[in-house]
Image (cartoon, rainbow, N blue to C red; front, top):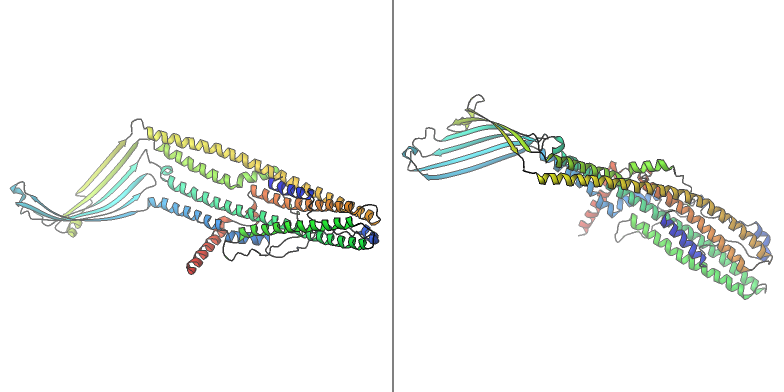
Length: 544
């Protein structure tokens, strides 16, 4: 059984064992109506009634409000969006880059020889360079550029003055060892895509956690409301008992001690109701805190629907099926698998960087010359004034200790993560097995508590008959009432514990969102959270 469930159950037992019954049942102690008392049976108990006795927000409506208004989800909903933007940033590395450069040069320098054509050479140049560069996923790059230099000189020997030199160039560079291949060059993109999936799964886990917290808060509230209704019945019973004892005391049929016992019993029931009413208020506020954003207009007194029928949901308690479902769907495992995939990518990158750098580059340039830029461009031809250049580049650090150690670190990080995920799978398996056993135990506890309650009712009926004919005292009859109330309270608590146990099983098998048809991947929850955040920001702006 879940520890928190045990704690609530233990608290109820301790409270009642200390002389504070949580509820009482209506059985007349009047001796003149002993025949009626023999026929009475308290079958109209709340937890077995089909009708709800308090209208308001249903559990599904509470969850919808919580997912829309929860401040934590508002914040978490931005993480997948930011991660998706990081994917675009990673892909932008392979976008075409356009550049344009202009330079004006005014140069005066002394003549070194009479052949320079002037005592002081003066040159003015206008240089323009523009190019397109594209990085390739293979590890290479391609570049296409245009360059022109329009120059004017005071040299009398310059045959072409002013002079324009222009050229078109095409350059291709390819890495053949280090940095080669799609796996290496897509690593940042693949890692970013995995990070986006990790953030989406983490956000889905946050949605599941909020949903589960709302479920727990809702059923805790429902349980305390049922306890409160039983307390009300107990007070009515105690009031009737006190009135009957006072009537019989006036007739001289009982002693003053019985009146004091009946009055003490009534005060005990009122005290228990005060404690239970406080628990109801605390439970309601805990639920409201989950479904309403913090503001000056929080509806602390909102009405919550309280069903009359409890503990009747069916739960699939097939151990192997639940374990397999959890291992396939638990968000922690899905995130761990993606983290391992990212570590594998890092290891591949580190392994590639251990290789020597060996690059091939080819560049071809077409030249043209003229008095003006236009003339020099027209002078360019593909079959003359051509420069071809082929370059091979090799580099390898001696010992290469840096790359080797980076690869070793990446390998160890991967091995460690794989061990951690095996441990996580074991933890998930243990969680599911414990949750399944808890459902089985609590479901059996409902039947046991119900039989105990039925036996307590029968014992109380017999004690009422004995009290009606004077064979027992009021103290004994009240003790049997306390026992019946304890059995009734434990029955209610067992039903609430069953609802909580089923919710916990759905939580550990990641079935909660599917139950409510909540699909974060359809982005509905995220869009609602973002819309709520924008409305909140807009309202603040209007206020300011």
